[in-house]
Image (cartoon, one colour):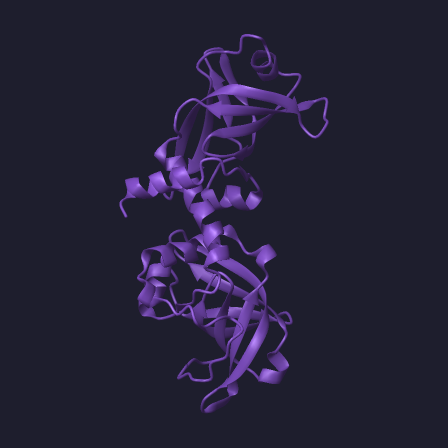
Amino acid sequence: MTNATLLAKYYESYLNTEIAFTKDIIKTIGMDPRQVFLKSSEGQWACIINSMSFSLARVIIGTKGTAYEKLASPNPPAGLNLKLSFYKQDGQQLGIFLSCKVKEIVPYMNSKDLVIVTLAYTQRPPEDLIEKIGRLLEANDNALRRKEDRIPINAESCRKLGIPKEECIAIIQNVPRRCILRDISFGGAKIVILGMAKFLMGKDVQLSLEFDDPHEVIQLKGTIASTSEVQGRKDMVVAGVVYDEATLSLSYKIHINNYLTSSRKADLNPQADAQGSDGSSDANFAI
């Protein structure tokens, strides 16, 4: 699929899907929330981005400023644009301008001092924005539809996922423990870890997974839902971790989605799940 085809798919599939700008979303897409402005022929005014789709945006402004005076007037300023800024990998900023017009102004949560301004786009959003938001929305969709698609961890999949090494850290009962990734998915992971199955089963766990491009360490909270011994190693366990979906970061979903959407179906093992067991392993690592 070409990039143009992918962008067209995102635009058509998510035209009216609105996302609220939480801290997780702002961090994941690299937005600078301090650099959001409304610009027109009559000036520039800072505002707070509240939510957005590919057809409209909602921003918050104060009722005592010039922005409200201008936008709420019977003749709002011409040439209105919403300016957004995003960090690029080299640390520089990318400015994106959305040509728009005022559609509606309503109080923000019954406040007398703040209002939400709904801005309808007058042109299709720039491709950079469609790609950023589209990837996020697709990852959220696939996190539900393809929750159990397993990615076996090996040298090739690590390279494609941007995982520098198969080893990771599992924190169990506040104790960091080294382990080896066996596979991962939207819904969970399998790890090989030193320990006894009966003492690990049902325990809360936090996996620390390192990713490159961009470099980050993602914390994944979950529960050990299955255990089995490693053949020939009574002191090792294959533990199936099921993630806590409520705390699963968008960045992790995007890493998994990028792999699943770019890999052949044959590379996946959708039959296995985080609650399954697998007693075979030749895992070797020093503790």
